[in-house]
Image 1: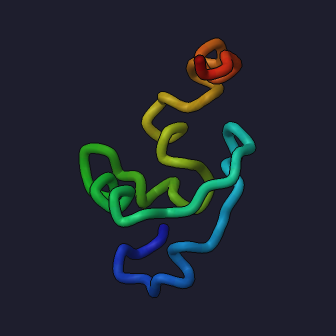
Image 2: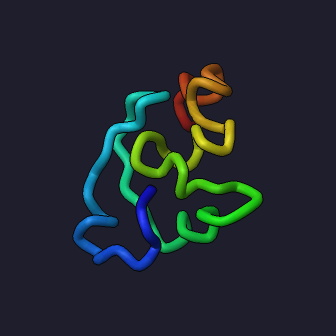
Length: 69
């Protein structure tokens, strides 16, 4: 689990989500989800916030496949 107090270089390191395969980095906004009820700190090293919350591209593939108008 990544500590919210970790230095910015480690936090901004690009990762690849194990669930959807997309690259992501952690932002200050992501740290709002580290504690209960979301506990993103338990998964922030392996998956993006969207996948952790169940709203990533694997959860709604049809909406991510469409091009923006």
